[in-house]
Image (cartoon, rainbow, N blue to C red):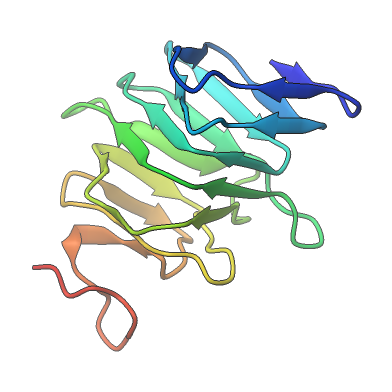
Length: 165
């Protein structure tokens, strides 16, 4: 799905909004407090600064690749819940679209154990973001910033993270 530079997409606040492939926002996306679900196996690339209310992917083995920033954009804002749920032995991959370069999420509220059975690589942190606190089923592949808290507790020597053990 591509939103053109002059285009606008207003999502339903009650109906299902499911994307089976890529999502590119070059225009205006209004989340309407709804949920966007990325399904089907394979890779979906998410590009263009976008504010999602609820962002969901529960298809085991799926790869979600987020566009890397240039001059601080794009930022992917999660206003509500960020729900990622793979399966034991078949994790969902959360990666940037360029290995070794971080993508920038902004969580408006802490995401406490809403990401399970996921591999996370190159997860950056937008200024002022809340945390994504992952349980022990998820893997810190590499190059993740401090807002990605693995194993359900804050990294030693850091502050500003809830102490969840």
